[in-house]
Length: 248
Image (cartoon, rainbow, N blue to C red; front, top):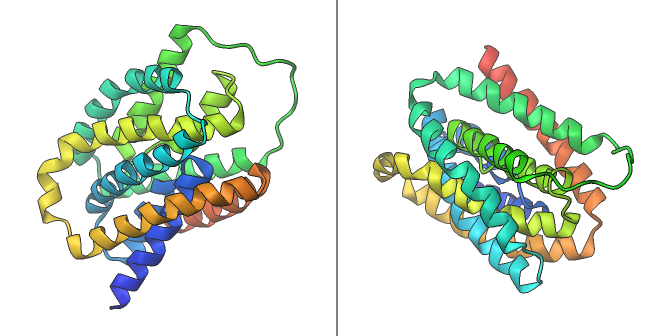
């Protein structure tokens, strides 16, 4: 019963992050699966991709209904990352778990720092050309496949700074990118999905789906800056825990 309760709570938090911020679900899902629910690093990244794919699609529907998704922009951005996500997803099984954990912690810390650092105004943002947009999408896809993360915390920043989308639309469009990248990274791991503990993964995913709808409603009420600050602090705590585990 305790495992079920933990799975439901963790799933709800993952859904809130995806629905409210357009990313960060895997940054919470992976450590929750490892430290709270007893999954190995490899099992956690595979389960996380499954959970994030399904939950992101749910959040995408919610934001699409509010008119916050740039379909063409998101599709082009995601398409550039799909080959990289599939390639690095196949390579991830050859990398030691401690290395994956340390890399994950480093990314979490960098993402948190960027969220907490005030942005300086440098004038109007110019839209990047197709080459730079494709390179950014490919880099995001590579991270998704290698570390088992949807990449939403990076996708939102890229959509705002590289493609000049408003924050609200970047959050919604990010869910389209996450869904595509996570699904591509999950594909080469489907063979190991049968061995997952579905008694845990199932409730976790169901709670995340419900949380995604609540996250979207929460985002409507709270300022983006407040949500971002709260999530950044949580990311720092997660990064510290995972880095400590990787080094010991």
